[in-house]
Structure formats: structure tokens, C-alpha cells
Image (tube, rainbow, N blue to C red; front, side, top):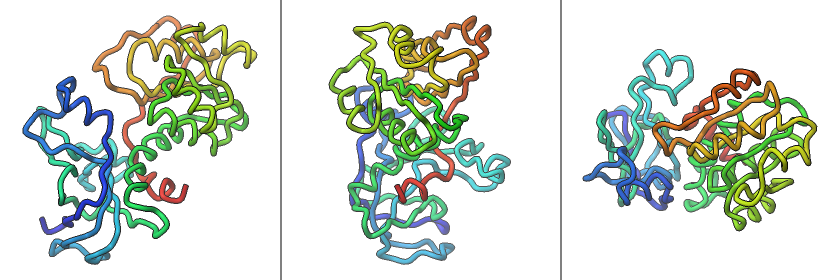
Length: 278
């Protein structure tokens, strides 16, 4: 299109959602579809309406294709765009091919120039990092707050690192995989809790007076969400990133009677430049 650029793909990461698309466990990647949305490359061709870019520039790009004109986009909330499309997704509402290909066409407005010190392979992590940074930005954090990251997978580990550069004090990681927890400790967590072996509340109270101030859940399953809620102090805040399950069970009375604030966190909205600087 006139406002698009053609990117020669140099590297593309494999997201967990791509794996779910391959095994058929998601309804958002229905074949035929070219998946892939964590990518980087070189501009191969410019649409007639594109300015400010030139052929050969090294770039990465957002996975979210936003319209730029709806009410949400005009407020800067591009992740909530009324006409939002995600690269490599095929669902009831739309079909948009992704970057598991030699070339992919994307709107120029979602491009970001790559610094020379970032390789194409490293750049494939920017999209995932932006999700973690956005979740931390969505979470009200005050100086020296205690934080829990539930799920030490790719996004959870990045959440831990994003929390590390925020104003948090103690950072706790929770998972059922000991190998992941050991990696979490190497990447910035102060404490690791294996919830397959220990009760989360009991372990949290060993390190806090009344529970953690904030919890960020990066799994999307009922047990993980319950773990996060059990760990929170009264008046704490829960931010949810994981969305692998369309529906989950939540302990409603615990949320209400303990006045727990719950935030959803979807994709990112302009965190790419910060992530490229990290």
C-alpha cells in the first residue's frame, strides 16, 4: 500500500503463541496463515506515501497494526485501537500474514530504526520486552515496593528485569519449574518460590510483613492467578499479562474484601524506544 514499507526479514523470533498456533491449541492462528510477529529486517521498498525512511535502513516493527485515527489511537492508546490487527494472526475478525517469510509489508507508522549496536537477532526480543515494560508501566509502583512475578517464562523473566530497573525493592519469582526459577535469580529476582513444592502465602510471609505490594501474572491460567492473589497484601495490585485461557476462575471474595486492584495489560503502546535503549 501507499503507506506501507516492504521489509526483507533478517530474523524472526518464535513466540509461544506461534507454537500454540502450530499445535492448533489457539483459535487465533487458523490456517492458512503465515505466522511470526517478533521480527527485524531491512527496508526493501517504500510505498509512494511514505516519507522519513529510506531503502536499506535496519528496522524492527510493532506486532500491532493500529489505524492511527480512532478515538483510542488519538489518545495514544494504540494497543486498544478499534481497528487493531496483529501480524501473523488469523481469527474470526481478520487475517493478517506475519514475518515467517522472506518479506513482509507493514505500515510505516509501526517502524522503529535499529541502533547499530543491536543485531537483527537481538531486535527480535524488543516486541516481547515491550510487553513486559508496558505491564510494569501499567502497575502503580512506589519506592521500595515488594513485587512478585508469577511465571518465569520468556515474558516473566523480562518482567523481572523491567521491575529491576523500576523503583521496586524486593523482587520474588514464582513458578513450578526449578530450572526457570534458577534463571530468574540470575536475571534479577531476589527470591524464587517453587509453588509445586511450597505454599505461596507461607513463603511470601517469610520475606514480607503482610504480602507483596504488587504482583504481575504472566501465565494466564487459573492456578497462576490464584497464586498471585494469595501473595498480595490487602490493598495490593495485580496486573495480568497472560491470556492463554479465554476464561479463568478468580477468588472474587478475596479481591473484593481485600480491596485488590486488578489491571489488564495488553501488548504495548509506545514502549519500543525505551526498550531499544535498555
